[in-house]
Length: 455
Image (cartoon, one colour):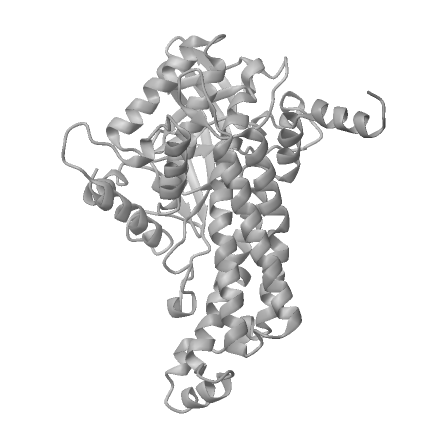
């Protein structure tokens, strides 16, 4: 697809809402324009005219080297394209795990993958339900729609109803891949549903928020050029034809999709944490140099700890790739143990690294004057004078660093990133569970017995 074809594809009758109004001109709406441009840039960069061409985001890794290459290129993509790759790989992973018991679902998933590849579509994973009272199972909720469910079964398909929360980039994608949010038990068959729904399907509405700055873009050097809408998806009796249904009541595989998506989201999240960790180190060193504090012992110690954090997250990612395993189909998926351990460490320690950066930078991270004030004839020269610190570091340079740190870690995007690093791919508890499940506990116990002289 070309950029212009992507932009045209968004004018398909989809129902999008933001700031209390329905959005009539999605492409030019300020809440969506930057994210759409980034996705369009990706389409333009990857467009090929030959008939069977497809983007690298549809690559299936058939070796550890190809898996590494996929992750390296992933960091260059916009979020929509990243979620497309992760979501489709999660579907293929689920298909591999379901093939022996439900071969028809595996076949449908593989056909859907080829459909998305052939049409160069972007997909998001709609997994998190509203959940209602967390103490109660889906079937015992006062309002049974708080978990997405099947409300009608027809010979040609199913009808679903519910809501999906926290769905990044849903409004500017083409497909919603709906998955159960957790393991369903006998009695919860109507809630064990996985399917693919076009964004413009009748009954689909998406309510959006965004951390994108609506003014003073020069003071938001990161989020003004890199942002995405967050969708609250409403599914109001949406019909899904059989060929797009991947699970319809089989509770024994209700958790298969969430586990598969968790694996690929956590791998991608770890790759991003590697880049983010190095960025935090770079910002810390730059602002310490600008402040003239780079040689102070406690500053050096904090930066050293940040270096170790970034390096260990990278080591975990490398281990996840090096220990990748082949599926029965011959393609590779990352190590469950190292992926979950690395993502858990990166997420659990992330806020501490941000704290170190704030401690090193100082209060001007959130109080530095606007860059527009630097251009004021009367006060601008004085701001430059008093924002100058270390020799050779002028006031504007230091002010720009403060704004970058605020935008990246302490403003709307910074808050979004802080929560997202913790919650992406599921919370910390889920990663602990999976890591423990795949850890060789018997080997560890045997070593313990050896030390205790019990063998």
